[in-house]
Amino acid sequence: MGSGNPLAAFPALAAGLENVEEELRASVITNDTFLTEVASHLILAGGKRVRPGFTLAASVTAATSDTPVTAEAVMGGVACELVHIGSLYHDDVMDEAETRRAADSVNHRWGNLRAILAGDFLLARASEIAASLGTEVAGLLANTIARLCEGQVRELQDAYDIGRTEADYLLSIEGKTASLLATSCRVGGIVADLPRPLIDTLTKFGHSYGMAFQVVDDILDVTATDEELGKPSGNDLVEGIYTLPVLRALHSDLGGDLAPLLGDVLSSGQRDRAREVVRASSGPAEALAVAERYTDEALRSLEPLRDTLAHTALRAASEHLIERVGAVTR
Image (cartoon, rainbow, N blue to C red):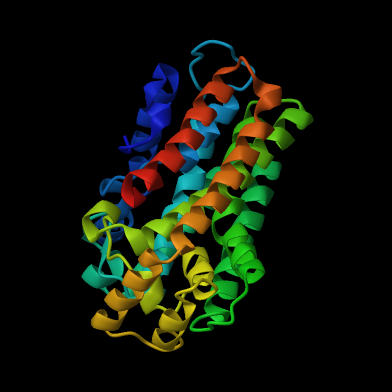
């Protein structure tokens, strides 16, 4: 089971996450042992399993006690996690990353071509599982994969642009991160056959949480260590991806020190200097305030679910998110 997932504190969800882990591993077994090895690489490296956790929690929204999750909810969670992992394979190729989750990235170990094909394989498996859960889930996941691509393309178009606007940034993370977290919640509601207003409530929560999640991730990229992240820190700066803490830093009193460092490929020394300036600026604190607003929005959306297991579990996940960045930035 993925470590660091606050949903694992709830027995039924913990058991469901164990089932997700088993099904994830089973879903990528093929007759080709090499493809199985490559496709399994990041699954075996672990992860928090936030997305399947949300699918499971959403599926038990109607329950007030620790009700066991269904097989359909488990497989819905597996489909969402396979989309996430497949996107990581592709992201690491674009970023030329060497590590992921404290292990070799797939592209670093086996090359870009194999990483791309394995990522495609994971997306295909996700689509196959989604189809087994019904046409609505299949269509929803297909649309989400398209939105992930749109968000990533928007980000690439803005690379090395110190004039990138905050609105452009928010549109990008809405596609590349928030859309899949919203879908993870929605899939849980659909497979549980919940009333449509409840499904929409869960979807809204997932979207707001997803926005906060990515802002927090971007803060950590400029404030945390390689060990804390499980991958190289400051990589967004190297790739010319100027995230919210950087954009806020550019508009702070230290913007004049930061701007000359950006706009082109950075050496490791320039990256370290840029991170120092961002950390010394008001950028991370201002970005954290934005993440907190999205988290508050997510929590408000849960009010109709009060006194349910889903409310308790998803609230715990939201509070954990802000605690995570606070532990690094304090």
